Amino acid sequence: MTFNISVLPSGRSFVANPGEAILAAGIRAGVGLPYGCKDGACGSCKCRKIEGTVVHGPHQSKALSPEEEASGFILTCCGVPHSDVVLESRQVTDESAFPVRKMPTRVIGLEKKSHDVMLVKLQLPANDTFKYHAGQYIEFILRDGARRSYSMGNAPHNGPGVELHIRHMPGGKFTDHVFHTMKDKEILRVEGPYGSFFLREDSTKPMILLASGTGFAPIKAVIEHIQFKGMDRPATLYWGGRRPEDLYLDDWVRARVAEMPNLSYVPVISDALPEDGWSGRTGFVHKAVLEDFPDLSGYQVYACGAPIVVDSARADYTRLAGLSADEFYADAFTTEADKAQAGIVT
Image (spheres, rainbow, N blue to C red):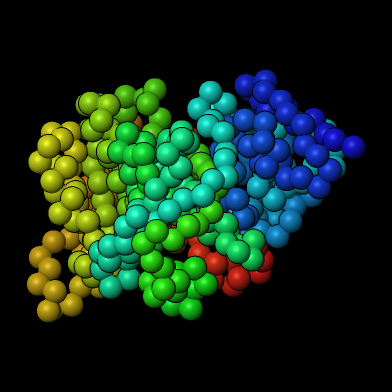
């Protein structure tokens, strides 16, 4: 038995197959529900259930607390309908949803940008037109069926291939391979595009771009898109790392600032050592934003990186600085270790 999923206020609807999560059914139908990790870890897909019965698979309580679930909220990524369902989701963007595709890719570049960040360039099939929004991600499909997700670090116009910024996680099944044994011309299988993190071009509000570590990858793609489109909305980038070398494309950012009058850049280091010779901002990157922008009521925020940074920014900006919750767009980079610690098996 299939179930009908209706989304308000857009009026869009689609059908979910038995045992199929709502988000997967929406993606299959080309309905652009908001989401991030697809693994019950980030909470980006959380929305209110108006009618129907939904049973959740494994997920983190920070993504959906028992209290929220009791109040009628669900996670579409791991929520399986057991009846027809009516949802309320303000971010349905069906006209912006590109088809998800599987395709082979070839490694055409490996460049170590710091001790633990590799910039990987992938070539897509020459006869394939891969469409995506700057800020979205792809998934590698490994030989055992496991998947690993990475944001594309270049805007579509800077294709036809894609670049990824991959941080080494010692002992990681995929990143150990990237750093130790991956070779040029290696063939890999990917699927995408995924994610609802991309620039909302219908707004004229100034933007805060917040990145920690390799969370800079999708932000870089967004900056390229802003420059390509000639947008004049003010944007301030805050990029945080533990040590200066963690800002692995600092020169690239400074070059863009020199070319883009509406782009400002604030690098922030949390654990600088005397030998680093760091004289810039220090502390937590999300707090640096609050120091400079105590009132965010007229802004949009695009935040990417470690879950602790994204979650803290969302909470503090809405609670302390008046940011509308609807103007906070995020992509939290949840690692396999994070998921395992929370009991989420993928």
